[in-house]
Image (cartoon, rainbow, N blue to C red; front, side, top):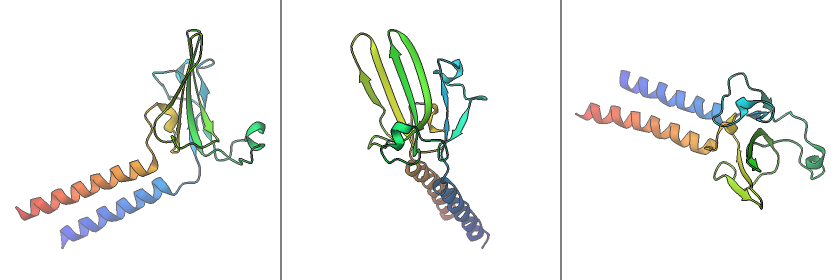
Length: 157
């Protein structure tokens, strides 16, 4: 009976965690520019760096003219122009099928390079490695299932 009670607590905690991860409407992102704050550059140092609630941040005029009312993702842009590297982190407004996945690389002539990364979870623009909410939930569920299976098989032995 104790084993069943522990399993119910574990499943209840998993449900609360899933709701907490997927149920939030506010999107928090890092907001900085390495040209003005070197902590924004890579390797990233988020200690005391600015964060912004992108869900309520003002939408730039050129974006609102397209009918977009609020930010839906975080962005990290790494630019290299004539040998100088700049990293900009902030809110993103235009979605793409690559969000929460592969970063987009662009290069031009005369030593111009840019890497754009977009993601949809809180403070996810800290690096180029991005995970979607679904990947996080799947990972948590897999860990819980593994713990449950481990308990079950040890009980059988």
